[in-house]
Length: 461
Image: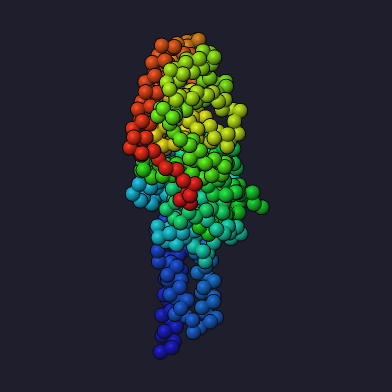
């Protein structure tokens, strides 16, 4: 009887080992039963310590051997890199929740309890960096195990531009809000599957305010062949993706609140928002930039807006040079702004530090309207996502030079992209009067109904 039972176990083990040997790819993508069989048979052999130990070691070895590393960037989808699962970790499905950005979680039910492992540190070819899933009991040989929560990001754009970087990081803020304000132990940053070792200084400051000082993992281990496995990882690869409008606004509300608190700014610092005569204060900021897309004649533009502001009781006009402002100075200027007028550029991302329902006026050089595509509406989208009012844009119809080859659109856009912005005194004056009138009436209505947003330094996280 005992011999029969032992023979049955041997036969079954042989069958199991055959499955493991023949099905490594299946195990990577969909297997749910190997760990459970591993545990079940270990339990069945618990009365036979030597056999149990030997088989356990053998199964662990086979599970480890079944791990298959795939390229982070799947070149089969090079023409559709952002569609579907994207070309980054293309074999894995996202998790979807209503109004939230899609994401991947490791370990989870979707990965059948397996951890994320990454190998390679190429900074110029994402197809030479690799990923795999592995059970905690059978990590790859020489794997470096990183404890704690890791935030993994892949973006099609970059982490230095304020707008693109913020769009990549906002989903992690949203995920943290939904999960008890959890903070990561490290960042892992990819661009097209290529390793990135830092964020831009503005974005890094914002993320440190949100999560504390969190290092960026660069995989500088002893050897490129050594994989890194993460105890827990949350991965975003669609930027804000399917995140709903109200959730996006809550994310920016949190960033605004924490940033003002960090910079020692009282969100209610504007004090009484109306003069003794009852005229609402309207703070109009002309936010300048130098170099590309700056105004050709900044003095004249300043005079136009200053003059129109002076016509409105309670309007306070100021000019700020974005490059001369520290991070907290930028926050301070925008906190004290109801209307910001500025050329198209990264500095406009600072609009997120204004109160909700504040106004944005934007200016473009010649050639952008016809050639820039949908990207020129980035700050329209940002205004909507952060609860601001984009009050329109002006595209300069005149350029200093004409594109030498009008038939080549991409080359022509490069020709016009960094041009300077002219002005139209009549249009600017009428436009600013219209915006000032809208803001004045809106503030009067808010004061009458006492519906002005009450700010608090008690942030949700």
